[in-house]
Image (cartoon, rainbow, N blue to C red):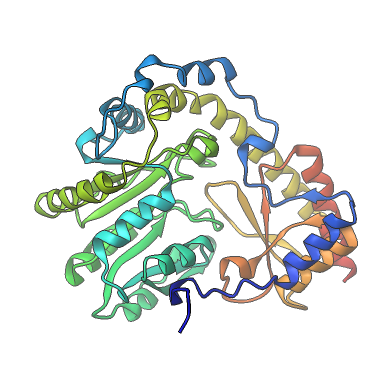
Amino acid sequence: MSYFARRTNWNLRPNLFSTALDAHRANGKPLLDLSASNPTSIGVHYEEHTLLSALTQPNALKYEPASKGLLVAREAVARYYTERGTAVSPEHIILTVSTSEAYSYCFRLLCEPGDEVLVGLPSYPLFEFLADIQDVRLIPYELVYDHGWQIDFHSLSKAITPRTRAILLVHPNNPTGSYIRPHEIAELNRICSRHELAMICDEVFLDYSLAETHTSLVENNGALTFVLSGLSKIAGLPQMKLAWLVSSGPQPLREEALARLDVIADTFLSPNAPVQWAASAMLESRRGIQLQVMERVRGNLAELDAQLANQALCRRLDFEGGWYATLRVPATRTDEELAVAILEHEAVLVQPGHFFDFAADGHLVLSLIAPTAEFAEGVRRVLRFVQSA
């Protein structure tokens, strides 16, 4: 017998990487952080007066329980998609406090305990915990690299079992930065229709494209689809805790899904009123934030490529969006051992590829939103260490 549920029986012992990082910080040593993911800590400018004023609206003092979220906030989200060239009804939008909560809604809607959701690898490590908490099993399929990342549909098809309920997609993927291509969406629709599966599509980095504007899946009607996003990345406001879930697909399935989601959302009534009333102003502020972030990304990417051009051991894998770059490095040791050695010898923090379940060692992941001078010096040290090792 145990006091605790098996679903939370994770291995919480510190790993080699976290132990080394704790030791470095305990010694008070300076550190160049090339793993930055928090947009509020990298020196971008926020419209402070506008954002803080938006949180003081008198309407926020009145409690209006709305299962899907306040209409004024859902209309603001719908306008965001309209400005991107896609049409979304506010009635197809469910507000949540985070995309993590939106995942919870999807898993609860689609899965019985022990059911399976397919997820492409490499991918974000948080998914495993989100699935475990909901008694859902994540089953991997492969993303393969050949002058860019793409879905290995043979691997995906082999992973489908009678217990598969959905395919999880990230558009663009974190950390590979690859968007789902139109022909891949068409094939995913065929697979989902054939096997009665849903698509869960995470689009938090959608707007951070290096070149062309990529289309959201909010209008995908070929299969039951749930698109997740929020203020955290879109507006660079992770602390404001407002996200959303948009349902699309064949009308009967979509309407049934929305009816069930309405009950799930009504059970929690999660988002707070001040942030919902401020949603329009916060989404409007995304323009300035995204310009600053993409200027940082492009500048750091140019610096990275310039330094890579002066050596022969490391190369950067192609990516299309997001704010991470993947380095292919000689696999002379595990990625974790390499990242620890770089931390200990060069005082630079990078993420080992195995955190994201790359298929093999020889990958390091760098954040392109790190402050410019810190990024340039950090890359110089990383490349120096790899050359010497």
